[in-house]
Length: 89
Image (cartoon, one colour):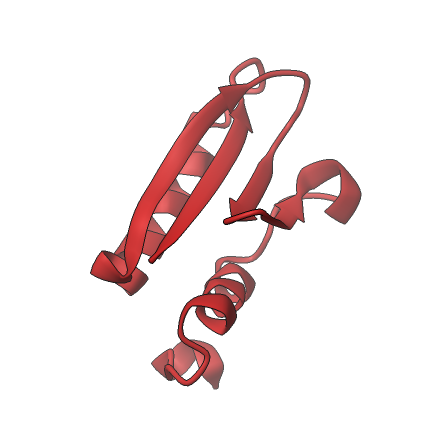
């Protein structure tokens, strides 16, 4: 099982964006995930972590990830043989 952390800036009001990513990941991977944690932060910080790996960091990666890319990254770590249907095509 895996833990995903979404750190989001409260000053920038990115809670809705963080919540949407969490909803999409939970809808796709459901009970395969132990937890999707929303972690408030500040200073423009937005980061998505899978276990100890930083999948995306807004300043480093210049913006926000595409949901297709994010689901593929999570799948590749969680269940590499899984077909994501239309997302993989």
